[in-house]
Length: 180
Image (tube, rainbow, N blue to C red; front, top):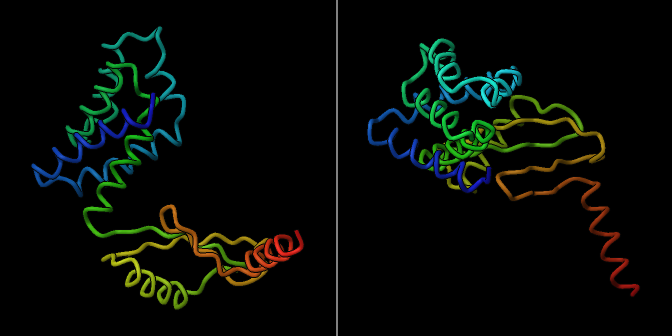
């Protein structure tokens, strides 16, 4: 299934969640559903299997997700009924994107040679939160020795590269273009 269709499901769920003031609750429950599907791929395979009737699939969803928000359960049932359960992860990802945008939340991945201290993470958060005009910024630190020094920060589709390896690559590209 295309990403476009997954976005339509997420848009509809997000609109419904906002109307009923349940956006945050559904956000949290979708994180749990994401973890369940990621850690139990056989469950997604079973929900997609043509040999299992749709009634059996729906009964299993009701049993496994009995304490889950009804809108989330209905989304999963709808995806199963329309043979689109393979798009659940894309749908969840787009819902998270919509929720974060609506609430001024951004996520940054910071690549560094060593783990950042709490103080360094806090300083980066304050700096980028202000620069991006966001209320909140979560930082995920990835240790990557290949950057040699400095750091590379990815926020959405934008990369801020202050790493030594990045600077060396830019210098190399400049030298190559000058010599041509």
